[in-house]
Image: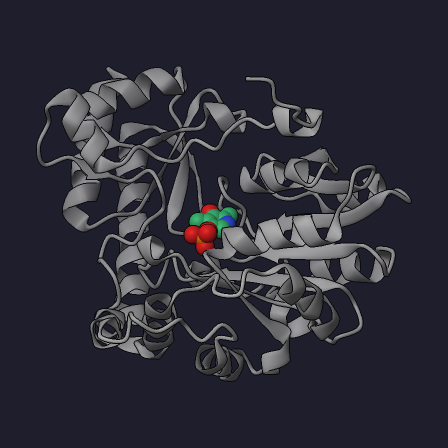
Length: 362
Ligand SMILES: *Cc1c(COP(=O)(O)O)cnc(C)c1O
């Protein structure tokens, strides 16, 4: 077969997700394994979301509301923004894709912190634009260095706050300074997939800076604190001008009716939300104590996951942990060959992780 494929598509390395539990059990013949590799919610989905999804099933013969009217209304009330500023996505990944596809073209540059979420690079390359990597400084996004790398070709800057995989935040003061200093035509995309877990009061929340003048986009997801990763739903908050552009390229029914109903209910489920936050914070504190006891270095986090320095080949530690039925994420593909990343799980999962790590490090 002869295919004419653009070089920029050939330059893309496919995304490798965390290993699914079913795959581990199939390949290694292990039962009762646990997964701490994809920052998923260990408590399951929001019960109110589950109920709403069950109620919506009977109407699956109908197309979803393509405009997502009711759900967008709920989000806009939740955040105190206008419905015109909200765009829904099949996960926030889809919004990242729409931003790149709708606003970047070959010759354009997009600045990405490195290491950070791998989807930014994939989508920037898919649009034929050039990713420009700016290394983290002490594991945090280096806003000063990013500002210095802006040229007349820079169209977009991605910030991940807090950053995946390091868990560090961008501070309010630094973010405000950054917004003041960058050219007014550079689109700033702030991915806040983990913002609900942040304990540091000085963390920037980009929605507060939405003014329909500066090109600022906030991304949020239902995949983490709301426990709906399998449902695929997220959204972006942005000036109406950018929202209108994205709505031109958005597939008419990109978010399905179950996802809209489930996520809408999840936003109201404050009992579940609080339960998740408490569990994760207690889990992280337990993991900190246990890692201290083992003398293993880690980076304090503002998310639901921790970056751990295993001081050994992370791929090998990953393998050893797999054999004990514990799925972690090796950070080799992120450029940290000696680090693993895990999310806080249920208490018994955290205990099991620590035991397996202790054994794997011997
Ligand atoms: C998990 C995650 C997302 C969420 O993606 P969805 O497509 O909404 O599931 C987005 N950004 C980062 C940095 C993440 O870690």
